[in-house]
Image 1 (cartoon, one colour):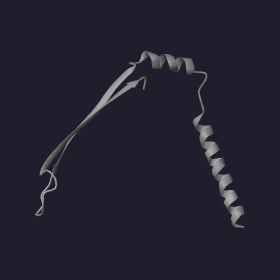
Image 2 (image 1 turned 120 degrees about the vertical axis):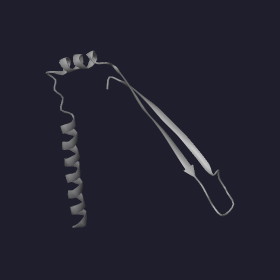
Image 3 (image 1 turned 180 degrees about the horizontal axis):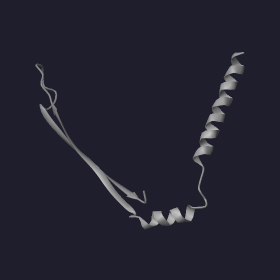
Image 4 (image 1 turned 30 degrees about the horizontal axis):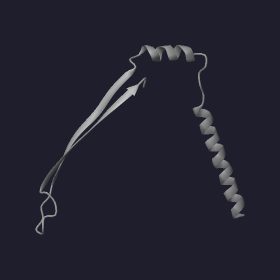
Length: 83
């Protein structure tokens, strides 16, 4: 009985996954050329990024094992083509 129930759950899981993949592969072929032209007319490049600054203060009554004040500067740059 336990193996049969496990097999039924497995089949149900496969069916759900198959239906999800099918829904994600729908493509509008009639307007594909028009949408491609519209995409190519847009600005092809996108630049974005982020910068952040953090500080850490440390104080202890015992032996100082680290600096009492530390700061961090972080940043990233994202480049996109035809997003």
